[in-house]
Amino acid sequence: MASATAQSDLLKYGQYVNKGLGRSLDGILTKGEGSWITMDDGRRLLDFSCGIGVTNLGHCHPKISGAAAEQCMKVVHSQCSIAFHEPYLELIKKILPFMPHPSLDSFFFWNSGSEVIEGAIKIARVTTGRQNIIAMQGGYHGRTYGAMAVTKSKTIYSEGVHPLMPGVYTLPFPYWHQMNLPSSTDPAELSRLCLAQLDLLLSQQTAPRDTAAILLEPVLGEGGYVPAPPEFLRGLREVCDREGILLIADEIQCGYGRTGRMFAVEESGVRPDIMTIAKGLANGFPLSGIITRREYTDKLKPGSMGGTYAGNAVACAAACAVADVFKNENILDNVNARSVELFSALNALRNDPVISKYILDVRGKGLMVAVEFASPVGTGPYDSFVDKTAPRDLAKRIAARCQKKGLFILTTSVYEVIRFIPALNITKEEMAEGCRIFKEAVGEVVHEG
Ligand SMILES: Cc1ncc(COP(=O)(O)O)c(C=O)c1O
Image 1 (cartoon, rainbow, N blue to C red):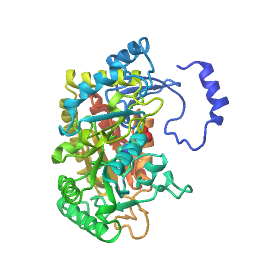
Image 2: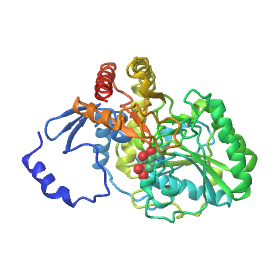
Image 3: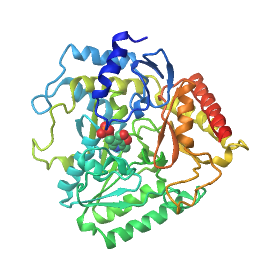
Image 4: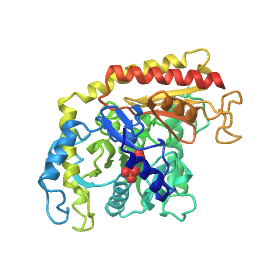
């Protein structure tokens, strides 16, 4: 139980917190341990959110928290423009072998995902001498100005604050719902349709000589947990090679083991020119990275990259420990084993005669998985998948019911989607418990109508 002081502070001072901040859990989160979180009123919840894909090796992993604590007593801050610290270089040594392609050999560490998106755009512009960026419909890249401009998942992030960074063009992403096509549509066909739109975009709106980069999440995150088909990624690579455009893979949410491979692009064999990482990189310590080619960053003027807290020593020490845990605890094997169990539970629900008619899709890779439910209103009258018989707000209500039953799980996207982001080292028993609660919650909410 939290102290009475904590509870009275919440009552007294909670009102002073900026109302622009949304919150999914009432009360104060007082403890995190592995896949479990505890609230001040004693509630203990199985955490299928990992703080939105961050504490991927569980809350307060002793090796990671221990490494950070140890670093705290050596050096906390050296300022990256003043001097290297040991964990900075150690981290490069540890993660170089993880890279999906040997050409990715230049590293810059920052604090947040949004910052590295800004930096990736900057590097693409400087390297190519071109300005425009093509981003994906449904993509999410952050809340700072440049990142907001390339974010196309929901209007809430930029509503009322335009104009944003100019020179951004939007390409349809091969997601059946956004394209108003049945969920059974062959991903190769969805990819072909989107790549045809890319040809048009480059002929009608942004000429290749003005286009610096194509930016995408290899698995749409905020946009609904939709993996890009390998054909699509390969098609983008071909266009980039032909036209001298850089391919930026935002692996901030889908990277670092989340999909069962170290990076989501690996499945397609596609080499990104720039890759952005964050979230799971330091398991909760603020750290992000831009990884690209030395031949690009060797052209940058010293001082053009930087930031007060960029590549903080404690965060880098935690990230070194994360890399060790990945290797020593066979994390990717666990992701793939638990993924099979999760998909099998969700596909069983999809075959349940009462529930199946309200499940439009079960999708994802590894432990980045989503269930999309039907909606009686959809995104508007032209949404082909509106189902007037479906219960309203299914995703939100199911997530709330799960919470009551001890499972914390998040919704995502403009559709009725629930996303599963459990810890990558979740146990078989914890996964079974999460699936059991989810099934029960879906059954109850559907029954209530
Ligand atoms: C794919 C992706 N890119 C960028 C960001 C922005 O990261 P941050 O919130 O650390 O600025 C996020 C955050 O959720 C993300 O999921």
